[in-house]
Length: 274
Image (cartoon, rainbow, N blue to C red; front, side, top):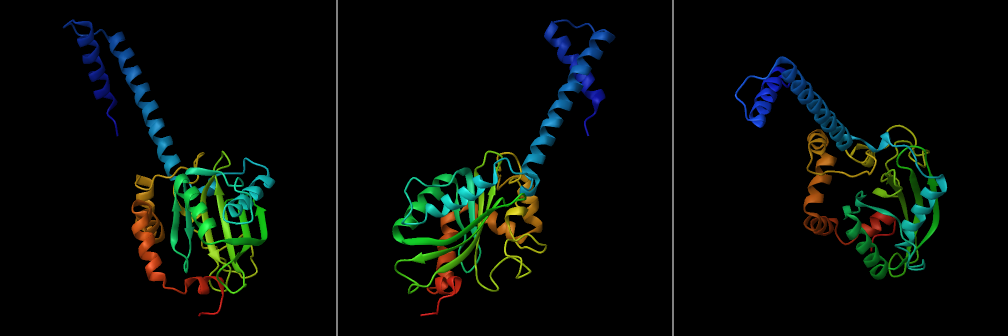
């Protein structure tokens, strides 16, 4: 807590020094300087409080700023970026620090930052060619605003069987995707506690996006090493895991890929194990 009396005394000394005089300031001058110092402190405190609130805000604090069709289109454009049959210029609008988290048997943090996500999308499209079929993307009034059920039909794996995926998209007020979260659409691998809750609208849905501090500010910009994230990570091991991966992305990705073994696509897609 700031001692306002000390601020008044300090303000008087500064004023006296600036004026080049040794005389004590009169009472009116002292009061004016103190009031200015108090006002400045209040402004700084308000700014700090606002910054802390912004850094801690959860995605569920936001409400849609776009029409439902926009969120549906963004979901489809996300999959277009991975679909070999889609136009190359059909891509989603990512935020600067967008992150993608794919739950096991996939590899957890599989994208971080706009630049990396855009580059990875192109690599996947070129090196793991697939058609993303059976798309059903929908918009919701609570975060995640976009949610999709799709199938990846790979050219060179799966023996013609589709790989069903459930995916969710969190947005900021500018309509940019800030967080992508994906699950295998297989029994026991989805986040819903209720098997009839196809779109994760009920209670007990286990998702990461609604727990990460910062996704709920206007730009959805997170600070992985900030105080709010550090506090959240201290009590939530999954957030702690996310934070660690953002700090050394490729090392964690390589380790996760090695640990997953050669058959994780078969597990995740529901294909027979070779």
